[in-house]
Length: 271
Image (cartoon, rainbow, N blue to C red; front, top):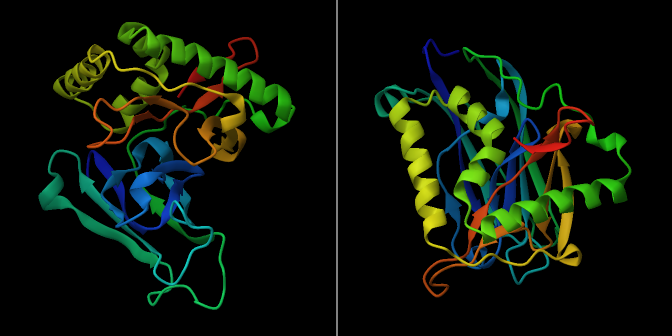
């Protein structure tokens, strides 16, 4: 266990396929679309916003076929490393917390056609906070599926209008619960808060077009052991996207949105 005052836990996945990494049943990495055709994804991702408090948590790596393929083959791999570091001294304090997990080192069998494959483990963390987040929110599995989809789609359509109007102030107001969670879990300083807000303002100031939202192109995911929900496109990409200003150089800018309900009266909000 760490002895840091402000510990940051992170995962470092190396995805050579499409896929999702979940911590506490919350997606921390999504890797889909054109970028999966060649090469892979690798990078440190802090997971404090998913763990909410000290304890043991399940980590799942879901492997799916690259775009243009229908199965995972022997060339597709996934590994996940686990780290912890002091938020105020990241490079010098970082250490490995749990053994790496990975798909078979020599690839999946060439004789079996895998439509998907999972690796998983359990990690234990110690943090100086207990965050409400979605822990005490309603169980969305109790809502009929067709009703839940309609409600969630309606909220996403409202969000899309805010994006289309490039109303950064309204978007930040709708995201205030998520922002508070991030500030607490990631120990944001005032300068870090300002940097985050400046980045958001800069994105909205570009006045980028927003992709359409069509029900037939979307699917719903219930996450967080029933407490969270999101819409994603059937190709695995995020539902809400700003169109790229230069599609030949970079893909669309995706906005990862998860919703919860603190009560039936309050309705959905971003978390």
